[in-house]
Image 1 (cartoon, rainbow, N blue to C red):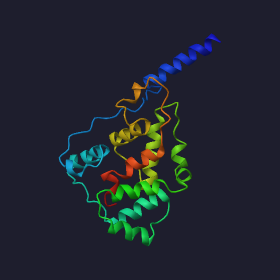
Image 2 (image 1 turned 180 degrees about the vertical axis):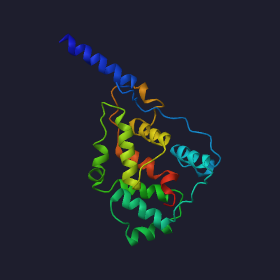
Image 3 (image 1 turned 30 degrees about the horizontal axis):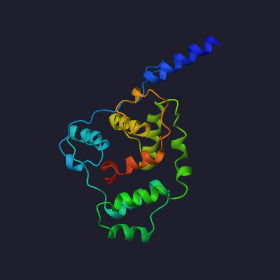
Image 4 (image 1 turned 90 degrees about the horizontal axis):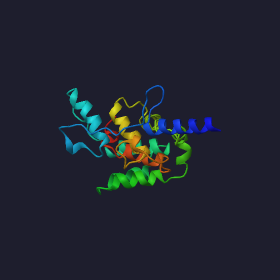
Length: 198
């Protein structure tokens, strides 16, 4: 009985400190780097990607045209191409929030949980480190490729765990039940990075 108590205490320290025997740690929200083109940024995640481009002399790509953007978004979230009626409505809607409204509509469609089950299965609420794996899987699911920017991936992992935390090692309580794949998907698809031309 005493051995089990010591094991539970030791496991608690490992989870609180965020490290295991391999030296991996819980995600720590990286500080956004200095960038030149601040107007391009939609969410802090974009600063990491843009910094990578700027450091190699590349400029941020333009946003995809509205038809291509809706097709990418609908295929990524709903798992099907956008219909002609959906495209017409979106192309004609010129309000500032038209894209975000479309994101919310698609996230509320039936079957979201089934389509993103592989991402959700990577989340282990007793292990904050699993957020990195889930964030990487979500990015691949939506973009068809890996996210090569480690700082951007770290930011997404922190966003999945708790958008209000700066350092996920600061958790002095069990991980929040608010780990939601929908929140992570929304953070990705509203980013300027996602909206770029492929």
